[in-house]
Image 1 (cartoon, rainbow, N blue to C red):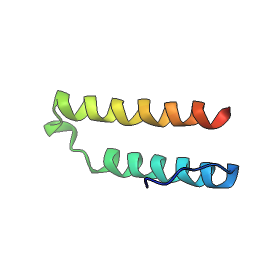
Image 2: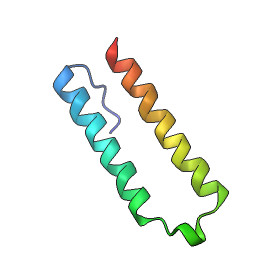
Image 3: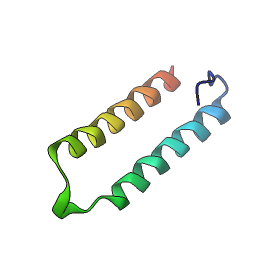
Image 4: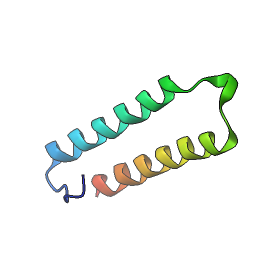
Length: 58
């Protein structure tokens, strides 16, 4: 995943893959055993995804 993504199709595929990874992590979390660190990691994942979306818009 370290390769640069330049064309719109690749950017969309990248964003979809990252979103699916986030959803997989979210589905695997047990709400009863989730720590603040887990929630912080989820927020970081969403922030990173949002940053990529903004970069790809330009």
